[in-house]
Length: 76
Image (tube, rainbow, N blue to C red; front, side, top):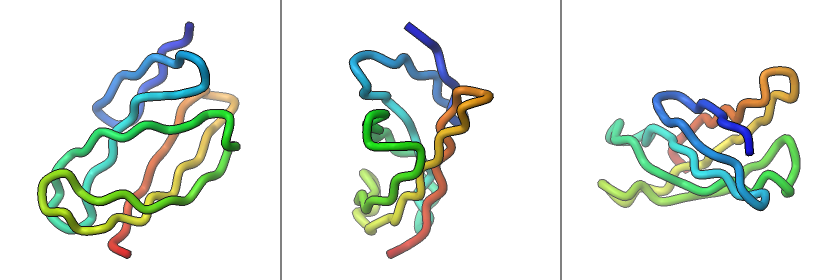
């Protein structure tokens, strides 16, 4: 088990799924999401903000040297 830090979130890897967080590009609210580590080092998908419901285009990148996921959000 590894502990990985994403922004203000601390997450635990378990069976390739990682609990992570992103800040909504529309309202700025922090949202939780799940990243599938087995889907690759670079991922792109859309997830609605849990507060304002605006769709966020999430760019997920995994840095192998630091063993951290970095998520950036932009409005779709």
